[in-house]
Length: 352
Image (cartoon, rainbow, N blue to C red):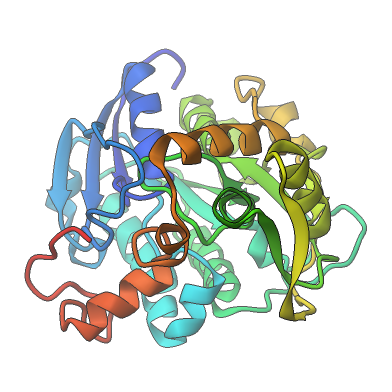
């Protein structure tokens, strides 16, 4: 689509990635229509001044073709956001991450939308060992979250035709500063513990490999995909990140301890092995989409997080509580009767 100005629908635009992605797309000249249910309204670490050009406060499961009239492409971020939250209610995870994804794609296709960029995950690879794997590697998901992404990719593929073109962005594990920061992601979490307690607390045995990518670089990848010629990205899957940014969890902890003065690495007393273990090769996206220029290393991200946590006066109760922990936010809403068993809002939710 090149230099053309597009009208892009971003689902989950008010979330961890969306609040960084929307301004990036707007800065590139595109109009953004945001769709978000507001589950995490008020879960802010920093002042949140971003706004989509048009905002629809609704669950993506309720989207209809008329909501997508005039849309050129969809960035589908909305979903149950990670493995622990997925384990909270596996049935709802499949409903939201698999079936709702297919629903959004179907109504987009019915509305004449041609491009669909799906936020998939390297969690689809699951347990693969120590050798780097590319996009042809077998899916071996070990969580409902990972499995839901596999099923979504499968069914989006079935919808593809001359008029509807899906692309799958298999994001590495995200990190970095966002107005809707998540404290439940490994780099953000280890840095948060270092700042608030002086300990870089590892909750696994530290040996699993993780590919890691800054959320700004995830946003750049989505922009590059939607601006690329259709025939380049049609039905393609891309590992999103940099091949150099694969680390064992213990190595991430060492980086954090090196950046945060006085911090030392410790292991949780109940630390256990983690079956999720994979290194990914991200060379394909760099080769096929030269406009994608990732900029962030883990070390630079830890430095950014450290400075931001100090600026925000981060406390341990912030890091571990419902404001920054997605699973605790959902449990809190359920206990208050504000979210039902299907993860749908019941009435209006106030900020945390």
